[in-house]
Length: 128
Ligand code: 5GP
Ligand code: ZN
Image (cartoon, rainbow, N blue to C red; front, side):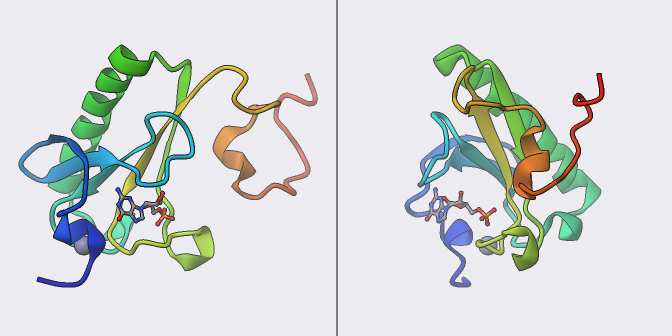
């Protein structure tokens, strides 16, 4: 057993699982329902998971979104992974963030995940 918090699983609030992947609530949610989906096998990043694991994770992301839709009825989602410290990864067991979004939760949601680099100078809609 390694010392990875996502491998230990003891305090995780698990909401769904399949043979190769596990979904649970984020301990420190950025929005109501923020959940994480991980491979059961310990791999560090998105690029270390195999095709079967990606398929299992993708299937669970869908299942989690259906649960969230039923429970919380969000208006949208951001789905994504941080790969490496430079990109903001803090837990080095690959995970996909499933972040439900609610109309009005931020003043201007345009661009979504593009805003991981806030100084980006152009927005595709600006020229319309
Ligand atoms: P990262 O920054 O690596 O992309 O995201 C790590 C995520 O794991 C964060 O959203 C953080 O709140 C969540 N997290 C960190 N430790 C724990 C924990 O012990 N339990 C749960 N459920 N989530 C955790
Ligand atoms: Zn792990």
